[in-house]
Length: 191
Image (cartoon, rainbow, N blue to C red; front, side):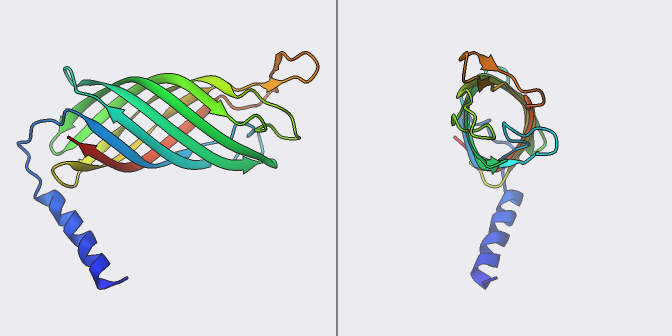
């Protein structure tokens, strides 16, 4: 690695040691980072594939450690020859508590999930919208006065069906996943 890159990484790590602990809690937070979803929509038993993507969120001014949070995440990948393009938009509450320098938080979000219509295997057509919910939590570690590193995870529920070609009524294949694990890591700007 170039010496300048090593120096920048060392300065970033040292800056967290200089962080002032008598700081007033940030009123707003903007988050962005990498996200991983544990399975694809058509990931039946024996064909489980995780999906990679991004996650972004905005949390508003707290009231007794409780914030309103808006979360948007997108994932892409393929499984059983079918492309997977997922987008989730959820909103809800985030309860946070500070322990020393770190801040732990818990989320409870609900919203909608969207997918491309060709997500099922074997050229079947699938529904493109679903109710989605997320229950999880994470930890923020401050790096500078306004920047923190976030690690979060949780349980996500989404229910996507197939469209049956004859009756146009949702058709459920046994074994299609509805329960997902979600991991995310990135940086939070607090202001």
